[in-house]
Image (cartoon, rainbow, N blue to C red; front, side, top):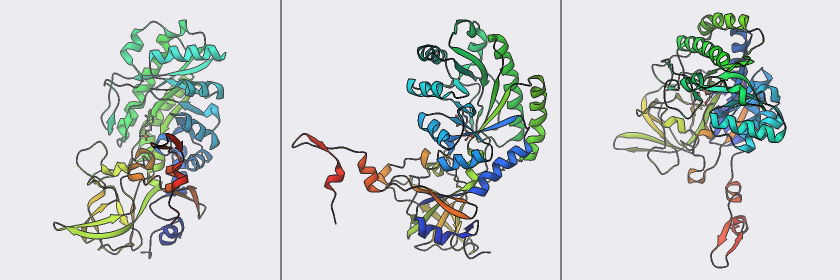
Length: 436
Ligand SMILES: *Cc1c(COP(=O)(O)O)cnc(C)c1O
């Protein structure tokens, strides 16, 4: 057992000292390893699109892109992030139920591969905007399928949803292509849900989505340039969960893709993955500030908590289940006591882990919440108590790179405007900060 936890031979103690805590640490080898394994095992016609929602860090996106990932984005900033990371517009799809005119305009002017349309009204809005811009909009229809497949943490199909167009409505409507002069219908997208840990569910989903896509395209009379089969592959976080077996998944899904690919030699096949690409690579590193006991339980109060890691509160479950948490600076010391790991917020919900078996903890210890590369700070209340966004560090080729600065109090105050009720003047709060 090494004296401390390392990433590519870099020790955690010096990384924590150099970059400060709390800190998100990404192991680039795990990011690229995931992409490489997918490309090696999954059908060669299946393109992997990275869902930036899972982790919008531009360097994370760039590293995945360098290993073949394209991008699926849902906001103007995500679109610009993907472009800055080097992803070409023709390898980007844009989805989301509430796209603004500004976002749609950026998609059309930049020439993204597909705008994934989520409602009849949005389709009309795209048609109108494309007409104004004198462009043709490539549009894939997102379908809310009538079927559902068990095995996902959050099921999408077969339910009333704000996402996509209900299968019954889509297959019951007049052919859409006729009334559209500035929209080129070109594909179908279906997203079945997130945190899928069953290989069989992925295979079944894919089969049904490909079949549905053919029916939608035939009904509306457009050529299937693309089918986006969603994704939502999960990783095991909690006791009793098992990671997907990629070889087994490939053995099931590749023949399905192969049959479709052969029948549709020009159709791009897309799988969107967020969590599966990034979760394992990330460790949320916090430092223990205080230890105490209350009513017979141990508490370690750390310098970061659910303000950066909201998922630790519980994912789609009322029962608190712990992410894997480890003592990083003294590994192998032996887990002997149950510890509640809490953060700096003034709410009892700010608990990263409940009764986590750990060695006796002391002030200064470094704790790591594992598998935390997905839905971290960007899905957390980072402004709560005005702590701001934590630093992010990416380790690649044995070197650590700061890929996001931690917010400072000045950063956070700079976005505000101080209205002075006495003079009715508005100025910057930075002008009146104490100098001491
Ligand atoms: C959130 C989302 C994704 C990414 O989901 P993961 O479970 O992180 O892979 C992909 N597609 C759509 C439509 C989404 O909403």
